[in-house]
Image (cartoon, rainbow, N blue to C red):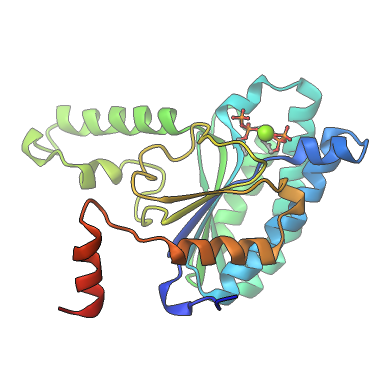
Length: 249
Ligand code: IPE
Ligand code: IPE
Ligand code: MG
């Protein structure tokens, strides 16, 4: 088994944490039990990224579409997210990890938003690692929001139409200042992106795991990183070009 190469780790890993409900069902328990258990996998992945020095981790925890779930599950999810933010704060502080919310703030229950804002505030100067927590997040909604802000700046004359570029547009997204994900992991066996980081994952390597999120542990995360390291990222070039760059010829 080849070892993990610490020099070629992704800078940004984004995870679609899927499969909590099915995990609970397998255990003949309610879906919320699966969401509770999923918190353990989050802790393992965060600790592993921090230890390896992966500077950016984005976690998809509640999508725009998740509002379509039964009301009791939605309420329980927000309650768990609030408790998770509270329970993990000492760890974020001791590990000097910054937490940033990505997603729309409207509709998030006020008590959760308050906790989110205070966590962001307390951790704002930490630079060992950044966690983007995607809550009430949708990729299309993010792009439309950015387009509105961008259009506003053009109409007000702050930006000239000649300056419009992908780079400038990116700066209007929630992830402004954060490099695009190099690796996107989705657990739970579904092969889709479910409205996640649609703009940002243009050149990400995609990794799909059959494991349900609560069963996804550190060793599985390391395996995903190794798979990432086996991929050849060409960015439109030919394989020969990439090899000559690596060999320095
Ligand atoms: C992912 O697990 C967590 C959220 C979407 C909040 P699911 O709840 O989607 O679990 P499955 O896909 O139904 O098993
Ligand atoms: C994606 O999972 C959203 C999160 C993990 C937060 P879903 O379970 O909501 O995705 P779909 O609906 O099966 O595509
Ligand atoms: Mg799901």
